[in-house]
Amino acid sequence: MSGWRDCRGWQRALTREPSSECKTPEEMALFELQNYLAASGCGRQVGIKTDPSMDESFQISESDGGVLIRGGRRGVLYGVYALIEALELGESLPKGVRTPCYPLRMIDCWDNMDGTIERGYAGRSIWFEDDAFCYEPDRIRRLGRMLAGAGINVLCINNVNVHMPAQQLPGSLLADTAALADLLRPFGVRLMISIDFSLPLQFGLESADPLDLRVSDFWSHLAQNVWHAIPDMAGFLVKADSEHRPGPNAYGRTHAEGANMLAKALKPFGGVLVWRAFVYNCMQDWRDTDTDRPCAAYDLYQPLDGMFDDNVILQVKYGPYDFQVREPVSPLLVGMNNTRMGMELQLAQEYTGQQIDIFAMPPMWRRLFDEMGKEKVSAVAAVSNLGRDDNWTGHPFAMLNLYAYGRFAWDPDTDPETVIRRWSALTYGFEKDLTDRLTSLLMESGRVYELYTAPLGLNWMINPENHYGANPYGYEFMVWGTYTKADRNGVGIDRTAKGTGYVSQYPPQIRHKYEDPQTCPDEYLLFFHRLNYDFVMKDGRTLLQRIYDDHFTGYELAEQMAETLDKMPFPEPDAGVIKERMEKQLENARQWRDVTNTFFYRFSGAADAKGRKIYS
Ligand code: GCW
Image 1 (cartoon, rainbow, N blue to C red):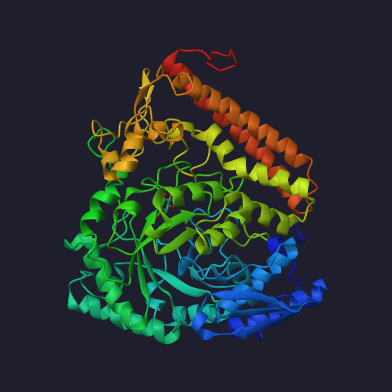
Image 2 (image 1 turned 45 degrees about the vertical axis):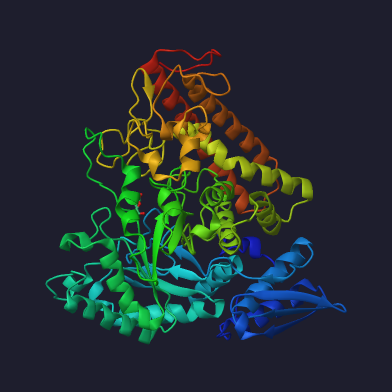
C-alpha cells in the first residue's frame, strides 16, 4: 500500500486538508465550502447563516441562483457537507429542515494504549502507541472531517476492556485527551472515554462499591477533573460484570445502582453514562442445558426498567448473542419502555469477514431498525472499523459501512440501496451502469457471506480465537454459551416455550412469528428451533439439502462477485487491494462450504440430492 496516503474516498471532492486555523464548526463550514467551491469551479453563490437555536439542524434554500445554508453551530457544517454531496452527485438540494434522529451518534473504538486494536482489521490505533498518545494532527483533522461528513458526533477513544495506566488519568492522560478533543471540536465531534468500574481500587480505596460514599466521592472528583480539562466531554462508557470485567455485582449491587452512581457524578457537567448490557455467563458448562445465553441480558435488565437515571443510556448489542451474521433484534431493545436505550452496531467486521470478505451492512441495519422500531432507542453506537492503514479501513469497501452508519444514525428510515449507491458514486464516480453493478454487488454481499458461512441462523461455527474461518465444532464445548448441538438427527436449539423459553421475551406479535417453524423466517430457523435434517422447509427442500444448497450457492455467488469486480475499473491502489482480498475471500468461502457440508454429511450420512461433491 505504499504511496497511499489517507485516500479521500467518498470525500474526494474536498481537495485541501482541513485547516488548523478553524477552531469551531462554523469556521470549518466556511473553510470546507470555500475549499469545495474553488476546487470544483461550480460557480454557485453560497452563503452560510448561523442560527444557534438550530443546534445540529440545517436547512438549504435556493433563491435567484443563490444558495443559503442556515443552521445551528454544528448544523451549518453538516449543511455544507450535504450541499457538497448533492452537487457532486448531481442531485437536487436537500429540502426542508434536516435534523438528526438521534442526538448521540457514537463510534466506539476498541483501541488500546499500546497501539493495538481489539478486533481491529485496519492496522494500529490512530492515536495510541507505546502506552501514550501519538498521532499526526493532520490525520486527526482528516478523521474529524470524515466523521462529521458521515454525521457522527461522538468518538469513544479507548477499548471497553480498559487497559490504561489509570494513575495518569487525572494528569498527563487527561491533558493529552484534551489536546485530541481540541483537534476534533471544529468538526462537532466530542470525545468519550471507557472507564474501569474498579478504578477506585487502583487509587488506594478498599472498595469500588457504588453505595460507598468514598467511592461516589472519588468518581465525582474524577468527573470534575475531566470536565475541567474537557468541558464538552460527552460522557463515560462502561463494560461492567461482563467477560470478567469488574462491576457492581461483586458488592451485591444491581446494575442500576452501579450505573446511577456514576451517572450522578457526570450529571452536573451534562455528561451521559453509557452502560453496556453485554452481560452473560461466560463460564458456562456446556453440559448445562438450562442456561441459554441469549436469554441473559433481558433476564438481568428488564426487571430494572425505569430504575436508571435519566443520563444513563443502556447500550445493547443489536442481537442477543454477539454481532453474529444474523440474529433477531435483541428483545431488550424492544422490551424496555422506561429506560434510555442505545443500540450497538459493529462496523469492525469481527464476525462478518474481517475486512477481507466483503460485507456491506445497510441491508442488515434496515432489518434491525424495522424489527425494533426506531423510536425504541435514543442513541446509536457502532464499534469502529478504523485503523492506521492508509485507507483507514483495510478493505476500501469497508468505508461504506462507516459512511452508511452515519446516515442511519441521522435517519433510521434510510434506504440501504440508496445509501450504497451514493457512496459508490461519490467514491468511484463511475458511469451509471457500473455504479448500478457495484451497488447491487454490495447490496448482496452480506447475504453471500451469510450463505457460505452461517445460513439459517447457524451461528458460531467458527474458529474461537480469531473468529475467522470455518470450524463447525469450534465453540461447541466451550464456556461461552455458544452451541449448535449438531448430531446425526438434527441441529439447532429449541428456544420456544417448550425449549429454553427465549422466544417468550418478545412481545406477542414478534413471538408468534418466530415460535412456529412454519412461520419463522428461514434466516432465523435454526436460531429459534431444533430441527431434524429431514424437516421440510417452506420451499419443499429438506433442511439438510438447504444447508448443502446454501453453502454451494454462497460459493458460486462469491465467484460471480469476483468476476464482476475483475471487470470494474477501480483506480489504484484500491484495485490491487480489492483483488487481493477477493482472492482470499474465495479461498475462505470454498473452505467454509466444504468444511460445513462435510461436517453435516458425516453426521447425517445423506448425500447431496444434486450429486455435487461433498468430501467424506
Ligand atoms: O465478542 C466479544 C469480542 C470481544 C469484545 C466483547 C465486547 C471488547 O470478541 O473482543 O471485547 O465482545 O463487546 O465487550
